[in-house]
Figure (cartoon, rainbow, N blue to C red):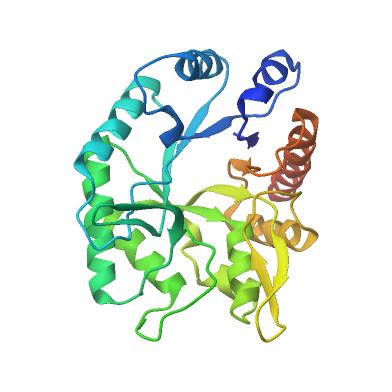
Length: 276
């Protein structure tokens, strides 16, 4: 695979008519949990033409509670129906008790969290009958109670469960800047040997109460130059991998997404030529 996009309904016609389309597409699994209707008719038409990746946002892998069995079963049915090339989720939590949050929230990195996340990942892989990919989060706070660094934590999850890494390069950059760390050092701390896919997206620049830069993983703008540079560094370590352009807010025309994917494809091709 090469570079792909996460199309929205307004892009479907242009995508299907493109004589030189992206290498693959990705959709959020939770947008297709209904049994039928126009969403599934459109997704089936796309699946017939393109490799597909499913991306979950609501399984709450990092949550303290057991996984929602009904939600797991609905995702399992979707995977069975479309047979995607990959399924991914986030190292985060988004539900507590009867409450579900429209956000991906950070967790304490300690032994108890490690055991719980590994249990959840193993449960999902067993039910889905496949390896899942776990995405590194964009974070804005850290917990004093954490006893394991994030990169090490993800490496231990990979080691214990056999899951893969979805390396979100924008998240890596956002988290590093927000916590005053070197993005290249953070990148090196991740289990890059387990990387199976990249995500690229834009971020917004704000400031915290003290005036320090605060980056927001907004998915609402082009990929920043610094993120492109970090992506090139990551490619040098992992080799070419499927790379997705994410754009979920202030969604642009199809041509803009296509241009971002083409930029990623050029870096992928350059890495292939260098390796040869």
